[in-house]
Image: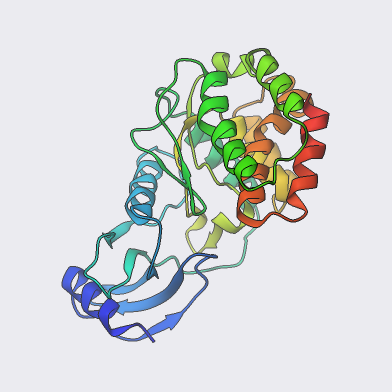
Length: 290
């Protein structure tokens, strides 16, 4: 079922490939489990992906793998982000054998995420990347509140405004901007953490080796961003949050003040990707925050 041009490209990088079967790959990719010379591997591919998306995803996965957490991160085998005309771009990863969630899965995931968040650095990332199919700016900033406004909220607001989808009122967004330094001040005490960056339940895999993280939008930011994303769409149990809190307790005020500020970014992304009911949902969260 692999396009012949893709098969040739894979073999040029990885050696002879055999049987392939389609598997889930998200909204912008095709994906397959492919038999290779050293066993099965996973490949995601697209005829017209955003330029560079697989390369930055691969580097994000390598950063997560190097962070010292015991969470499973698939090994990057090879990638081709600039193929010949008529050949899909692709990213090949270690195949993670799926498994049922064993006892303690959620707690191990929470503790593993806390260990990932102990990695430090500076606010931002070495390169821009993507959130879904949308560009994500990562140029460093001296203060976290400045980064969150200039690199996260404002770019998505510009996009929503241009599409006629701006949630809420302009004055409400301005009020948020005026209070952001106060609201996000605890982030400066925590300092930067390596973030997965797109931590919804679909990007957590139950593998035979334990909880695994896939499809990151990695950068260094406030650790509560990942937690806020897990709470936006659900799918994470009480044992996950208990495991995280025991390993790396959250500062007071997260749920009351900062969670909504962080969820606004992901809601704006969904406004820009899908529109519809996300516009009203974002406006409601904005009203609560301000």
